Length: 176
Ligand SMILES: [Fe+2]
Ligand SMILES: [Fe+2]
Image: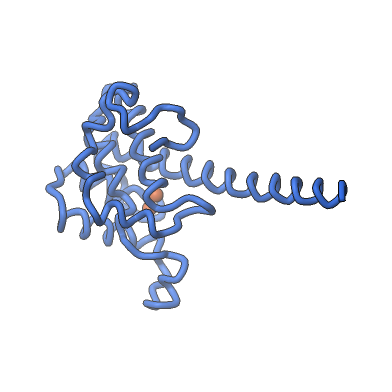
């Protein structure tokens, strides 16, 4: 298990600087695993996106001597809304997934895990400034930036793979 742009095996506790132990119980949960069934950005599943955000939250929080445990755990649950947002509007009439999903993720997370106030804040306000209430903790500011950065990289990686895929195809057809 790897985060985008990283060669560290996250299932190896030593390689990941303790990351695995910090989120192990969450990773073993069936509903957290279920996030693999939903697409987030391009080719990236919601599970992989949450791993990306969780791991880079962990790294940045450690770097700035913040609460890396809260950053990692809330990062893994920040998009724990458990539906395909591409079909969500059609199925429910909810046109504001961007604003409503942090509440859905927090509701699910509280139902299945015990969260600290800081972890709740990280999940609930990760879409700031789209959701108007500003972060109450520095760790929430970290996820606001990391989530957007990961979303951008995931989308760019998808576009790049499409372009290179097309390029390879045209290369093949030219040779034929
Ligand atoms: Fe989100
Ligand atoms: Fe996200």
